[in-house]
Image: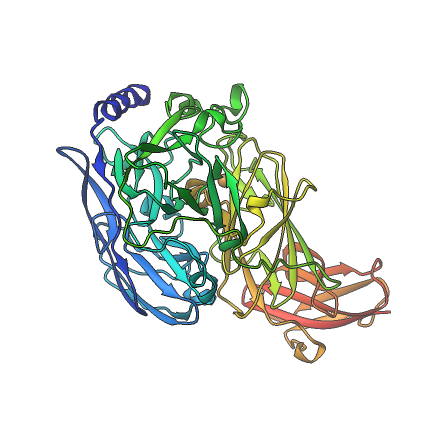
Length: 571
Ligand SMILES: [Cu+2]
């Protein structure tokens, strides 16, 4: 059935060779934004109405241009109809407090308005906003809700860069969509065959014969894009997720995974009247990346429909660029330097964490290393659990190890990070800037370093997750709280729990005086660094301390009613 549907879509796609003018979302500026999420219809094919969602428009969302240092208010109203359409809006890449982040906990019910107000703290760069509802991200993003955020700052303004929106500075969100037999948007079918740039089928844009800036966003649910141009011309990569690089990198291909952004400069000064296509070079994409000719192995590790999707492993056009006359004040050269990078370096207090990406084998299904279900550390996302506890201002090195047969784009909220190494090797120059998504290839270990600054919250978590949206919705996500460092004076002895013996030489026994089950515990050193932890789900716990050196420790108990901290002594 799907195979025939795929053939029909091929014919539809090949039959519509006519180029359509590229849609450029309207640019909104200022500090107060009214964003109405609504449902409507879009004709991807003439005469065929497909239900789509958008913000202030039938599909996609306005581009928000905001200035570093400004305080902005976002009035987000959920006007979606239908049942079960509460949603959220997440400001992807922005450093904002957890309550304003728009993760799955900041639900906007139908008919309601959510109005977060926050200071813009990021450097100039290309960010985006999209729904992030619990188990609904793929559905709401695929139906069309996604918009750019362009952050401006003084450092970027001082550079001679193209910045006339829609003329020599083009936002390009690249997506593929999947359709059911009624031509309605489907999700997680592996038959995403309609290619869209800014929601336009077969788009063209007039671009001036000068240096042009493209802000490329992979807004697809699962497909990665290896971008390049039909004439194989070089371009200059000037920025990635979190802002500008220190110097342009000359390249002719750039791989952009789901959620990632790059800014590139294209020198078209000698190309007047040329027609050049922005393309995806799927035939050159390494195996294991969604969009390559194969993911997974032979046999049970295959995703059958993957091979019915004609886009996988082929080169295809994304945007036809018709090079027209220069503008009045063209940029005609590419700067040799951009902005200084300030990567973090580990110190004595740095915390090291490891997340292992693997399939889940205990859900009554045979694990399939290409189609999942996937999880971090064998733990599926749970709205009511916290997976990691992070200390404010402490530097952290996270290792993400991918044990599966498919590449996963790892995204973390709140902060930007710097990739330290990939399988022990330094990252390529184009990945040295600030990032909030990194694609982890099969069997790879990627380490990044970051620091969780400015915002703490004892109950509202941030998220980390795979940005393949059906992986995220299926539970490939975790949460973390950012908390103040624990000092001895901060630790309150909880009267609800009895610890004995204390001090002790071999073990602490913890008894709960009320019926408040201890779900798990952590043993921390006195600086708040986790030494070990265990999941227990019991009222009485015995914690061996025979391997600990003599000194003070903090027991952190995660209970049904909340977190209790108790100071204990090893002697
Ligand atoms: Cu994934």
